[in-house]
Image 1 (cartoon, rainbow, N blue to C red):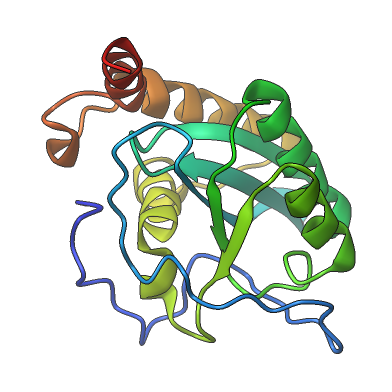
Image 2 (cartoon, helix red, strand yellow):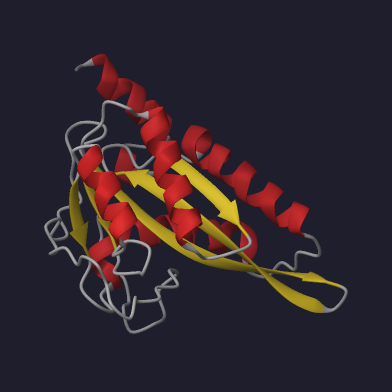
Length: 205
């Protein structure tokens, strides 16, 4: 799937699992405005949370993946897996990404989930000099590349499989993201992998 396409079908449920806050602290405008091009690493980041399921003793259990994507090279900059879709999941993902890229001050785009409209994430963004942007309600195209990555992961490694332990599902997610960053060649990246493009862009800065 090309990240440059605008043909994402928003009539079907998106891969995200957005839950809006009853009283959001802050709602940002759609400053990204579907401009998914970035010339330099850490210029624009996208983020989202997606739900996965596994089975233990005939019980269905859930796991949540929170990830951040750099639009310049489509690499997954940070990700966290958790049993709960809560504030901590998103805050931990944000803390990891700023630990990896402490000098980055990107446009930070998300949906309007309760974690992203909270006071805590708003303050974190201000502390690190980041500009917040949010998708419109029920418009998955506004976060298209992030939705595209999550869809790719699920199509290639999750759908049509049944995971019978938490460990096997976590292992699949971790291994896929490593493969995606290092070896998932994409036409929209001139048949290179995200980290190859990242290194190439860093070499010309």
